[in-house]
Length: 198
Image (cartoon, rainbow, N blue to C red):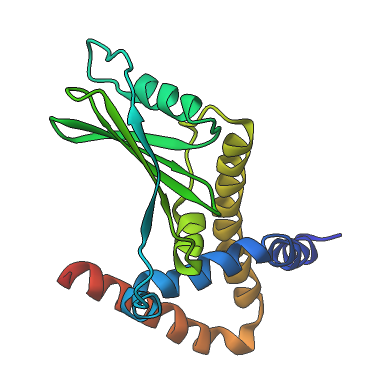
């Protein structure tokens, strides 16, 4: 097998094996770009958040600024397990967002009142898609989350290899080089224009 044949096969099988990932990134990008249309679909009077529970609660706050242990305790005490983020946007409350692709729970802890409010978010397909698009990283204490991050790295590498192998195959076809330069130059020029002006 020579280099050309190897790169053609690599290009082909990358497209097939990473197709579902390319597909989800492509579809979810449409949702990111046109949120107003998807928001309009959910203007039916059904609330976005519903109360799961509200009860007295107390958790020890750390001396430092790292609130992740607080979030971990709240999620655990609520009987959940999975990815979450902990934030303090206001001094009187701590917000914990628990999320899977299929459901989201928002916890609001009020330290002074020793009160915990938990709310379930209504399922929405557009948020399901954007959640898949945006998920990544290795900050969660879950093997599956880490594996997702590894696959995202592989997809990124696959995209780069797809570009490289595509350019190589185009260059080997001498009859198409002129149109290839037009396509390549047009893409680079339009991208540079947006970067410069935006």
